[in-house]
Length: 171
Image (cartoon, rainbow, N blue to C red):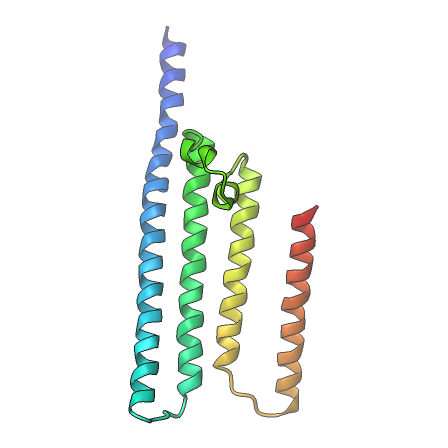
């Protein structure tokens, strides 16, 4: 009797995962909104600049930085979505609407194991790091050939890492 009651309570405790699912979705929505506002502000900055026939000193860097920053937020939002969908499917139930949908989105968000969830999240996190890397590179001042060599080597290292990440994901 006690064992059955305990096991039922233990099994029901999995619903605490709904907190992570719910707040993960809220976090994703917030990130998508913030990124969209950043893109909107960058677009209005560009339009105002061109209408005023002005060309601020760091105009191109500011535009690229704004867009890359928004892409970074979008990617982190995707991580939160994958995390929320994955936790729900692993601990609560399969998402029936995803089964009925024959589109690509249903396959991207389908999670059947913790390893699969980890792999999907880690790939998006790597992309977030790559975007952040390129955002930092755009803001860097280069003072000579050695700095440019370091820049080239760092781009090569990131490219090789992405190449091997893609190879691992296909096997």
